[in-house]
Image 1 (cartoon, rainbow, N blue to C red):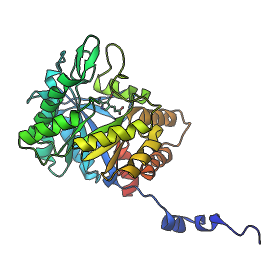
Image 2 (image 1 turned 120 degrees about the vertical axis):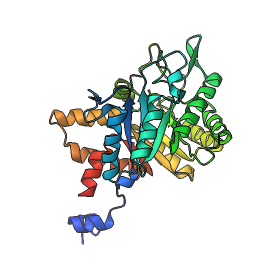
Image 3 (image 1 turned 120 degrees about the horizontal axis):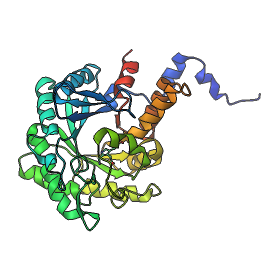
Image 4 (image 1 turned 180 degrees about the horizontal axis):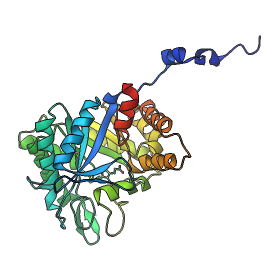
Length: 323
Ligand code: PBG
């Protein structure tokens, strides 16, 4: 009677595999990042992120319609401003590029849920995520600017704000400012456990946000730390985060799993630019099956515990799932 155990019995064909499958993906799981830039009729492909674009507001609205029609419920907006300065003033300009994009998208595609990335790095001349003093990012003065930025997004009509800067206390500062301005119902998704990762490289080309000096290791987390992620997440929840995010995703599945086990709020994971570009590049070289690799990666992020996945693959994956 050997072997008595035959796990292969329930792998025999696609029907039984479907019946016992533990994890399934849906377009509902996805949030698709979009990059808004100034100008008109602009749609510039990001070299290191094939299939992703910097788009002027008129074009981003069209793109948003396409995203919505694929059944993807939400987009995450980034801005590439015309003007950068030391204090990132375009970030909280009521006529800034993100503010305009929010208004237009909510106007033309009202059913699409618009989340905005709240950070300074795309708007500062030095490319860091806050105010610089003596060569480092100053925490407390940055909070005020982030709060202003979040309020200006809410005023433009954003459904949710997502601070990605990793300053201490920013969720609380943003929560208080939103409440004071009458946006007590606007949720915050915090980039709670955000690591100082090499996998953000292509994004920095996309958002033109590479730091001019140094790196982000004095504010983003050390990739070697696991328990510290729980501390970051618990602080953000205490400060009022409604959804917490782990970022990147593929190399931090243990963190996603830990956070899911330890807390009772929805967990998001950011399948970042480098993770996307690697698969695109591998596929272009003919070294990897792009569609299968994409679905495997997204499934593994969900399996680890993510309720929501921010991914540049959202449209491609939705097309596979909608078939
Ligand atoms: C802004 C921000 C970054 C990403 C999202 N928001 C870049 C960074 O922290 O340098 C990365 C997204 C990606 O790589 O896809 N702070």
